Length: 114
Image 1 (cartoon, one colour):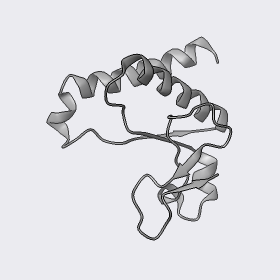
Image 2 (cartoon, rainbow, N blue to C red):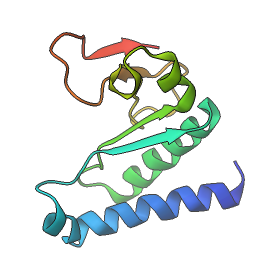
Image 3 (tube, one colour):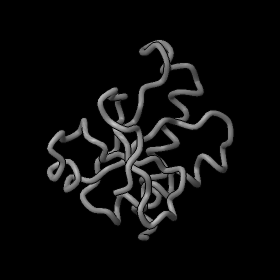
């Protein structure tokens, strides 16, 4: 991965952690919001997932709730952003990461394999 891209992902994630950990998010929300990251490609999704995983490992504590997907997955799913197209950064090395809906849906299984 290009250092510039990796640095921008890391800076973005660090800003979210600071926003939450400094208590600023508590003024704006009741609980920290779920972060939805939409990328242009599977490679970009994997890079962001890996950086999110590394940052969480370094920081410890309560992880940010992050879901990632691609524009192609959104366009290819009949339910669009509400479909089971989202992955977490929990296992960035997984070739086929588990996918789920980011909102609970009683009519759908929680996890599917992409």
